[in-house]
Amino acid sequence: MTKALEGVRILDFTHVQSGPTCTQLLAWFGADVIKIERPGVGDITRGQLRDVPNADSLYFTMLNHNKRSLTLDTKNKKGREILEELVKICDVMVENFAPGVLDRMGLTWERVQELNPRIILASIKGFGPGPFEDYKVYENIAQCAGGSASTTGFDDGPPTVTGAQIGDSGTGLHLALGIVTALFQREKTGRGQKVLAAMQDGVLNLCRVKLRDQQRLAHGPLKEYPQYPNGKFGDAVPRAGNASGGGQPGWILKCKGWETDPNAYVYFITQAPVWKDICTVIGKPEWITDPNYAKPEARLPHLKDIFATIEEWTKTKTKFEVMDICSEHDIPCGPILSMKEIAEDQALRETGTIVEVDHPERGRYLSVGNPIKLSDSVSEVKRSPLLGEHNEDILRNVLKFDDRTVLEALESGALGAAPSIAAK
Ligand code: CAO
Image (cartoon, rainbow, N blue to C red; front, side, top):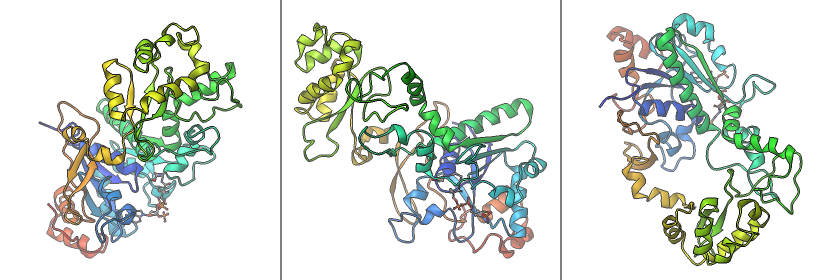
């Protein structure tokens, strides 16, 4: 079976999390991703949050599967020449440097186009054009600036960031879509283009239901929010705790064992079409006809009490028992799964969403595989490259340098010290 992006060559100038998640996805779909790293140092994440001494961290290995690594000092004359040779033969260049870095390297959009008019230059920045465009940004800054933090958490607590990396990995996903869209357009126009995904914009895109609620607020209180009917609404969307972001009220409820297990909880949705079943299952058949409970609109002022009553029932069952019983009645609910439970989940391993990968320095480790499944494109997860592992391979087989030119490049110091493992 072929791979969807086979034949697409990516010059991967990304680092940390946002950019690498984008190029990793493209690599999983079969693109040839050549990661450029600073000699001797590499992507800073190689050494961050290390769990095994002297081995690439999980931070790096889990974000850089299926890539090749070329060390190149782009501030060295020869290094810059090699970089430009790569620009000439790549389809896409991806970067997430701080604003201005690429221009300072001499790789302005004009220069890039001069070298290769078909290339797509894809960038992640913290902010789009505007007052903050020159700012450096990390995950949580994007969550705060994109509207996520102000709408996450409980009404009586501070703004809260979420564990899902919506600023970094979320923007990486947005950028990947921009890249394949630009590649598709290039089929028709023959021209490359610039693709920009700003982290603030990416987070806001994922928070669009909150911008929806901001506008609804002008027409009265948000009745599905826990602040209704007794709390106060200000002039901005408040934090809604664990309330559902959609039209079907939901909440997180305690299950059997919650006193000692921090994840003995279930997310329970009081979906209108199965209200009768909910009442029957929790032992409240009288609510089926009671005018205070029978219709969704009538229930809104009582949501807190309704969930407290349902919780009396869920507390008598484990989260998986609640799931089993509810699924028999088509009542939507979901267990709060710990990372430990997810890591041990056999079904996720069978689909390749959780994979075990071997690594020469650190041994076997768990990773998240490609979450997007194509029926006609295989997606294997290969280990991340060691720093500079493919230096010679890329000079000879991608750039087609002969022995003399390879030697010249290696001796110039542009690639730093010799790689620790022979390229495969
Ligand atoms: N050879 C020589 N120099 C190199 C090089 C190479 N191979 N690779 C990088 N460099 C140099 C750059 O040229 C730059 O130097 P100058 O500032 O002198 O021009 C320097 O390394 C640092 O680049 P940077 O400013 O991007 O890196 P930083 O660690 O200071 O900032 C970050 C990191 C993430 C805050 C910043 O890159 C950024 O804001 N990126 C955009 C937003 C983003 O993607 N954030 C998500 C990060 S993940 O949480």
